[in-house]
Image (tube, rainbow, N blue to C red; front, side, top):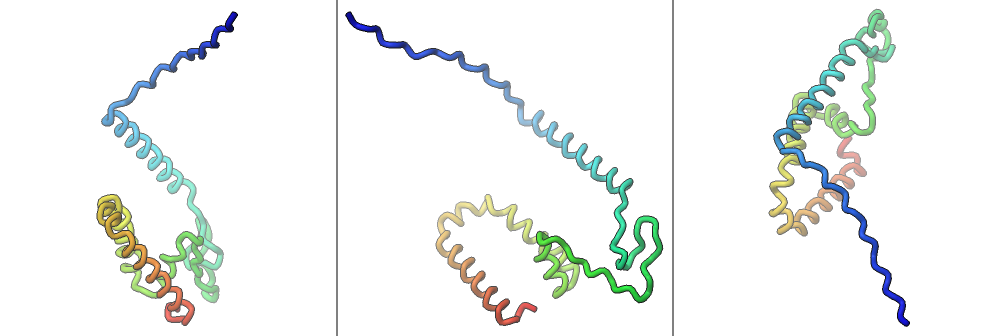
Length: 145
């Protein structure tokens, strides 16, 4: 007498979720982005932040800082340290506008440069390591400020 093999249980497949057409999905994204922008604009209008008491502009409802008070040093969070470094050493239009836009353009172009980066990845990596080493030596010698 043989024992029959146990049959695997058949679980019913869940129904697939309906897929939205791209145009409808894009429209939903635009509506959500514009709604978030509206919220941020309203918050910026109604919740006016004051500056540091030692700042050079008046706070939300206060008077300007005294004449002998030191100017606001402008210590930004660490995320903006590179832009702040550039703003102290270069003209503001170059360091605050042109260079960040160029950086964003490079980031936007990276997917299109993928084929070139794959082919010459060794040289690109070597160039980046060399640039990092050069900047490290220049910072150690005090050439960057």
